[in-house]
Length: 328
Image (cartoon, rainbow, N blue to C red; front, side, top):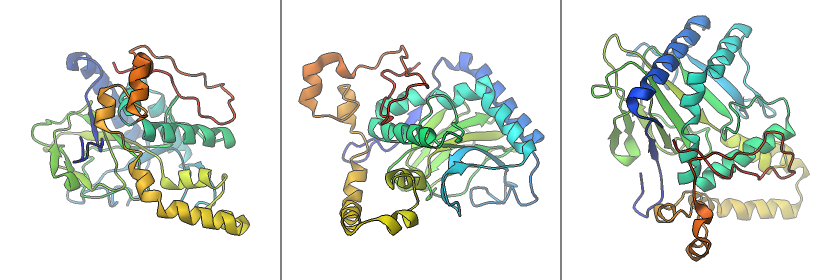
């Protein structure tokens, strides 16, 4: 999905293999989501929140990973009861869930490289600085995953203002609903209604785009996996691994002046994070000057063979990214 200037502002990601071969993965992942909900315990108001339609009965959620904000004084893992954490650990370890959650990482890197690289490097630096943080999956660029546990995970219009504004949120749909009759993703600011079948995924800048789902039919189930990173994590890293309040107590006048200059230019800088389709079409995934890419010919090629870095890599700056990504 492109804006009028050709920037990529959303990506619809089809299953990585033919639908008939992908169907068993979706069925197993759906069963794992259902089992996780049955294993977990929730407070009476857990189903009632701003991302759930009250008319549909609402739905509970499970969370994994780490974050910052909402009263936290430092970056840390999300906490839950022993019972719920065990259920989430089992869910995250399930092969079908990992396939569903991780297959969009290749398209994310290819089509939104500046955003992907910022997410990936920030997540990696934070995990290196704070070894106790629980990473979602190997090589995941995201800090947090929310499992919307249904049975009818249908949301009213909302935006996720806590996420980084110039970023992407990855949403994957699961369940056994008829995608022709319900479960559509409504992107209000784009004037689009998107057919969103189980087993498919989408990347959208959910902090600045209002979205919702259309209801599903009685007796059907819809679940979703939502991966994202809170804006506070990027500020924590930019502050030298401290909060804004802590940074201000030690910042010099020059630091404050520099930060104000950065703030005034932030909007323009943020817009540059969104890739241009004209660059992607010529395999210029990083958005460099086009003549550089043409001169190097295959420099920007993406192979279907994965060649990722070792998790044991101890580069100081954490800037090492996977050289290639898997698109199938």
